Image 1 (cartoon, rainbow over the protein chains, first blue to last red):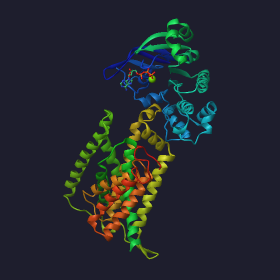
Image 2: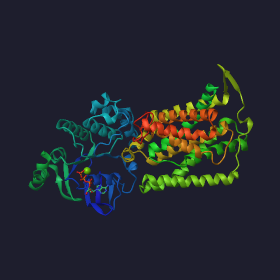
Image 3: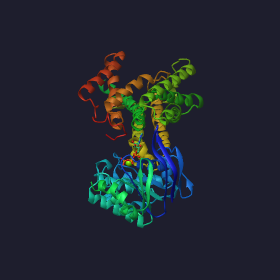
Image 4: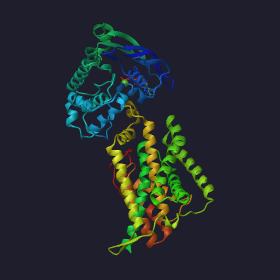
Amino acid sequence: MLTIENLSVGYSGIRALRGVSLTVRQGEIFALIGPNGAGKSTLLNAVSGMVPAAEGSVRLEDETITGRPAHRIARSGLIQVPEGRRVIAPLNVRENLELGRQAAGQRGSDSSDLDKVHSLFPILAERRDQLAGSLSGGQQQMLAIGRALMGRPRILLLDEPSLGLAPVIIREVFNALVKLNAQGLTILLVEQNAKMALETAHRAAVIEQGRVVHSGDANALMNDPVVADHYFGRAAA
Amino acid sequence: MLMQQLLNGIVVGSVYGVFALGFTLIFGVNHIMNMAHGTIFMWGAFAGLFVVLTFDAPFLAAVLAGAIGGGLLAVVLDFFAFRPLRKRNAPEFSSIVSSIGASFILLSLAQQVTATRVLRFPFETFPVVILNFMGLRIQLLQLVIVGIVVVMVFGLLFYLYRTSYGRQIRSVAFSESTSKLLGINPMAVNFQVFFISGALAGIAGVLIGIVFNSVHFMMGEPLLLRAFVVIILGGLGSIPGALIAGLLIGIVQTLSVAYLSAGMADAIVFSLLFLVLLFRPTGLLGGATSVARVTRS
Ligand SMILES: Nc1ncnc2c1ncn2[C@@H]1O[C@H](COP(=O)(O)OP(=O)(O)OP(=O)(O)O)[C@@H](O)[C@H]1O
Ligand SMILES: [Mg+2]
């Protein structure tokens, strides 16, 4: 589905990503875990066209999307839910969801998309006239995911959806992701909450200092003593 | 007499409001102080005058020409003066300098073309029809101008708040990078914002050109200065703020010309600015100065 080959990104001298290769298969949840500053967001942003790649390529099915402007990548069906949700605060919930339709482009969207999002996150229907900026963190995260779904993604990229949320809400968000995946949506999930991510994902990779240091089956990674030692202490905190 | 002057002030002020609206729109969405807005206003007036003189076009066609001329000029300005800066993430100050440069070029061009003359719309562009209403002498032109302003303001509000295009504009105003992730093309949004802003300036140019019966290359510059006052009084990026402050300045200016002296008008307008800033540092409507976006309040 998504093939990342030898991707490198530099921010004026600092090399944030050094030759990362990954493949996300059709229909799976792929988790990417790693410590602060490892380059997880950089990877998602390079794939989404938000930061230019210095080297390497990204393919979505058989189209090469490297170098395309970000809005066109979104319209090709690769949609990112960014770190910190980034809802459009001065617009209301309904308007935020409507904005999400832009990414659907030629793939089209209709009223059934809104119904689907509302049935996944009923709170968004309830709060449709509330300004997005006045929602709670969890509600904003649901709005950000719902907004991405309005664009009919072929693959959904999520950057730390659990960030700053209470455990119950994290559960709710992850349940929604599992539900979406069961309906056939491919998901690339970036998380610091390694335990949660590995429990949810089919396959995973660990990234440190801009390099993939472990990758494979999510269960296997969870039971890998090195990974466990490194990440579960932190995840529990 | 006072009521009469008040009426004149409202008419002129509503046009100032439209001019300031275009200025505040670009500021709200792109965070650019477009110092060439006055020259776009002036070229809009020329575009209107041109179709009247060349094709004997009627009044409304002149207004339309002002809108299209101003709109296109603003789009071209964006392409040459601002887009290259946006591309390399230049600080906001560079766009001020760049637009001052552009306004000089546009001013000199107009000065050359007109040989520094003051031009006038032909007398028959808008027939003088005077209506008497409760002792007031209202010109039909004044009614039509207020009507055009009202239509434009409601049209703009509808576009911004009730259409998908407007939603995208407000989204980009809040965050361009998030908007891109949603599949919104910021270039298309900028195109619309600059066209609308320029069209508002161009229409204002034609209307002011007809009201004061004079079109000349410097006509936009005093207005640009007053537009600063308008947006500071009304709050940067605020739509109703721009309109209310525009009206206020139009009234103050007309009254001071009528009762004091023409030379005092701007001094009074700017003193008013300082007074307001002293007591309401965030502008008349308050709270909008730091929020650089297109707001309803
Ligand atoms: N815009 C930027 N300019 C310069 N350096 C940056 C920029 N964004 C990220 N970096 C640097 O690149 C490296 C990777 O950052 P990135 O945000 O991708 O990490 P991350 O894995 O997402 O971290 P976190 O878990 O804290 O979100 C860090 O060293 C960071 O300081
Ligand atoms: Mg990150």
